[in-house]
Length: 129
Image (cartoon, rainbow, N blue to C red; front, side, top):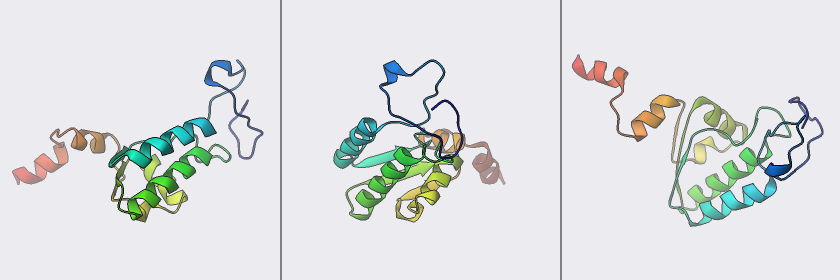
């Protein structure tokens, strides 16, 4: 799309053929299908960050579709789904699937550091008391 605003005309183009005056604001249907195929065989999902400008339709489509797929697989017991970061949680809430995920955290950078096993300053300060 040429601009980021609600309900603007958007079209799908190959990533190598994005016109110079336009922006990439979401992933396309082929990419969504690819992610969903990977999720169908995955046991664990760690999600940090939406796929597109989900706050602005129509650029929410990929994030909403993938969120619903991950939630469905989690509810079926096929996937452990862990999501972190404020934008990710907002997107899951928008898709009405946050409660279907295994674990959801609004922490972004701290979430990733926790996943890496790093010490978190706030937790360390509490432990020292």
